[in-house]
Length: 168
Image 1 (cartoon, rainbow, N blue to C red):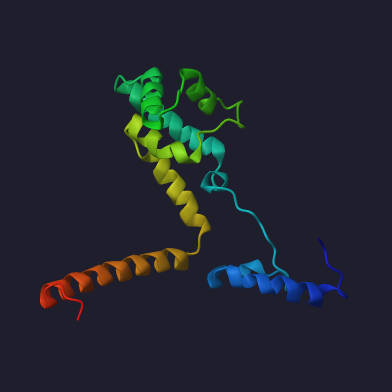
Image 2 (cartoon, rainbow, N blue to C red; image 1 turned 180 degrees about the vertical axis):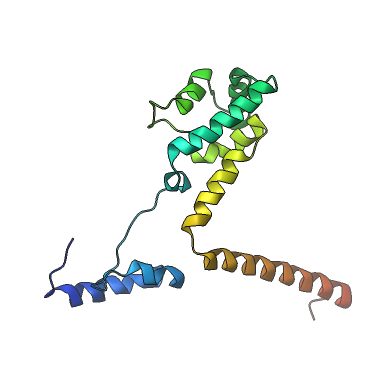
């Protein structure tokens, strides 16, 4: 919805109230020139990357497997076992077909793909794509929180050692 200059302040005030749900690091980019929030619904990391490029990396995995005597049928069987659902050779071929852009490996199945193909190439590429689209401060915050959690665990362990498990 486009606001006219006459309505922009009211819209900006209403939309700005939703900023409390948006992390501060993203707030600057969320406001447009009228002060309204531009809501874009980013898709999963696969949408950040060129899907054909991801299929290319899956193809590298399959080629490497074939070179090591692991067939697509074997990969389908292993995926079926890991995912506890039937994955067929046709399913894998559909994921790989350039003409089938609408058919993709589901995001939640990527760890199983990595196990079945014995390769982390696809996951590594997705992580690179995500990293390119997320501000570094988000990663820094995540790392700081992980360090904080580790420090809290260490404090608790030391308190148990010093106080003998008492809650003094």
